[in-house]
Length: 253
Image 1 (cartoon, helix red, strand yellow):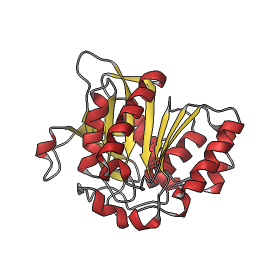
Image 2: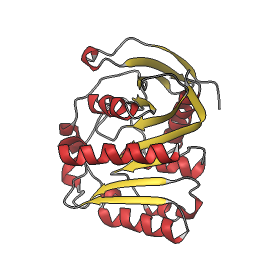
Image 3: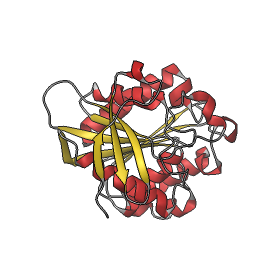
């Protein structure tokens, strides 16, 4: 793909309290994206992970998640991969506006794949990143885009799917997975709190079964009564998820 450029950026309006480092990532034919970088303590280089937000949009909660994961030794990049948040899940986050980003894409579209590919390329070029040890995290729409990316490109070291979309066309390709997956999903995922038909718990379980039947490395955690945005609105689930993600990344990045 065409060259992606990365440069320092000023913090978006209203985010000074997050104490994050910021980058502008320019993607040909897509525009300028913004990303928060949380660097682990100590000397690098480090494994890294790219965080993709859900349909509700880029938010302070993703920057804080990046900071939590960085404390465990993984350089974490929370990127704004589209500009406007949509859906009922918006009430669970504190939005960060970035109007230069592209419009919201379908998670399996060529536009989404192009954006995720470019962002992964950008993360690999960052100072102190081990380019062969980069993972991917996606929530909801971001989870669908992350899963589509790893099925098509296969170059992430590990992938974390949080309340992700599991449409049948991706479940049909589960045997093509080439890296460890961690699935985190609430059993009460529903449209009323930001989910979709493709995030229904039955869809998640069907994908897990297909991947395990194909001999793939999949860890699935189902939160009894957990909702689509449990990572953001349930403190106990949040703590458990962060601990599980950090442990998974230590083992596989």
